[in-house]
Length: 279
Image (cartoon, rainbow, N blue to C red; front, top):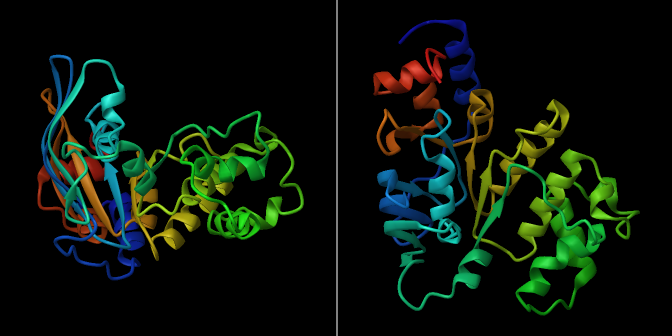
């Protein structure tokens, strides 16, 4: 592989990763033969990916190759889009979330989502934002104060907001709002957290805080993050999947440990992308 400095740098960052968990069939999250369409447009073709328990997987690739579309198939948000369709199966702990009769609301409680742009509810306080998912799901809230502190702590925000939980969520900075959205997603105790470019609109300091949060979350849940930032993928993830469309539907070119993707990728197209030759 090319010995250019960017690659050496990425490989060095990725080599510091912990030893990642291996996938155990029947546990974790698994996509088998996933296809996605928007009307007649075939956006994704035959994606097979495993997400082991307590790991972070980064999805990388050029814009328009289907990464975010794939992410939305993992918690049935793809079907919100008029004309959207999918095929294949997505297994959570061995059960297909698309099987007939599945409770979509319960699925989205187990597989949460954090979007590119922070979206706290502007009319709600910081505390109300954190608890809003529980209320929407009509789940009992007996230990409200404990839940608030635990979720805000896990999202790396507690120390900054503990004295102003009654302030509006929209009064926080962009980075704080994104961490508030993470806390809101954690309040319903998900098994998986999907993150669609969660740091793309944030300053470097806020990005670092979110990345620290992601690493800590992986001690207890599965995190899947779409990112265009190669350094970020190298810093936070255990596994990396490279997507590419090549003029047709988006495909998964290669998936491996993040260290392997950035130091010894098997596919020339992966090497070209991570070395900055295109994309």
